[in-house]
Every structure is written in structure tokens, then in C-alpha cells.
Image (cartoon, rainbow, N blue to C red; front, top):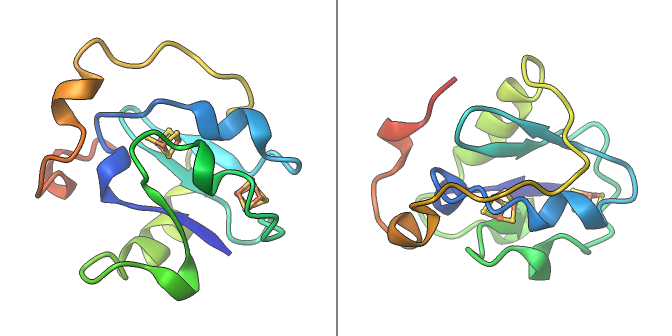
Length: 106
Ligand code: SF4
Ligand code: F3S
């Protein structure tokens, strides 16, 4: 299973959704998550993310392990997204900023 991690928050470029063959991305106000029950480990989304926010659950960076549980939890209440949309106007300013988890909107 692949996991969306912290750097997606407030960047939300959505390039990832277009390549997923099984439509397992779900969209929240300022973050996307992957449905772990649908992901088939095709690896296609990982290189598509300009924010490098997508990792295999086996390769989650230090401090990002809790995003596995967060993806599983939030996917239940957020709708599926399959088409790329415009990124937030300030997406590039937030790219790479630390401690964005507190800014996550549910
Ligand atoms: Fe979708 Fe493949 Fe990414 Fe899983 S690894 S979320 S199946 S694109
Ligand atoms: Fe987020 Fe990267 Fe997709 S920033 S919306 S995981 S392309």
C-alpha cells in the first residue's frame, strides 16, 4: 500500500490522481489520502507527486509512519477524486514546510 504523507498538506497538486488505475485517491479540503483497501501497489503515483509526498508503507520516512493510519481513517469520510484540478494558489510556498499536520482540515 502507498501512503500520502505530510508534505501534501496545503500543496495538494493532484497530479497523483490521474495515474491511479484503481481510483483510490480521496480528497479532503487541503490533503489527499490513499484508500489502503483499494491500492494495488502499482507504484505509478509515487513519481508523479511534485511534492514527493507519496511513499510505500514500507519506506515511510522517519516521523511519517502515523500517516498510514491517517490515510486509512480519512479515506472513509472523503470522496474519491480522479481528475486533476488547479493547485492552491500558494501551494509552492507550502511545499517543504515542516509541521503541516496541525494545518490539516478534515
Ligand atoms: Fe493508485 Fe498505484 Fe498509487 Fe496505489 S500505488 S495509490 S494503486 S497509483
Ligand atoms: Fe498531494 Fe502530491 Fe497528490 S501534493 S495531491 S500527493 S500530487
